[in-house]
Image (tube, rainbow, N blue to C red; front, side, top):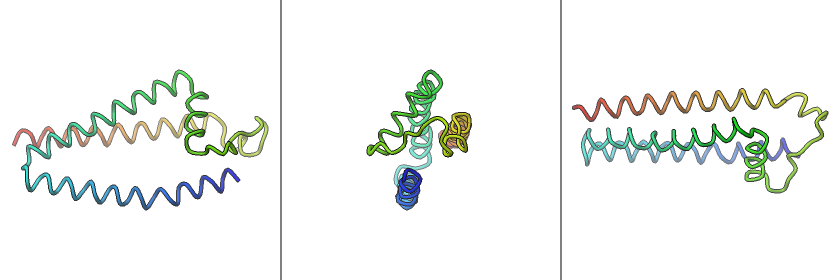
Length: 128
């Protein structure tokens, strides 16, 4: 039942993220048209800085107490509690803690990379 809940969550989240991306792009273009390149540059520098601060906080928490972070994350997204399994269950054996730590590292690396790229583009726009 947990995998069904995961599938439902992912399938309902993807369209929302697409809409958010479209709105963000439209707002960025609008900001550029109304406020100019410098306004867009400030936004492209500030927004990822806030995101990076949040990611750093979450990464520190996960590094210090991965199991606590994992439990809080799952408790928030799956309040019905069907995400706990015995340590020798098939799901835990297929997707052990090391897998999730690796995935978390990948998410952080991609987020940091894209944020840094946005900050660099924002700074270039500020110089023009």
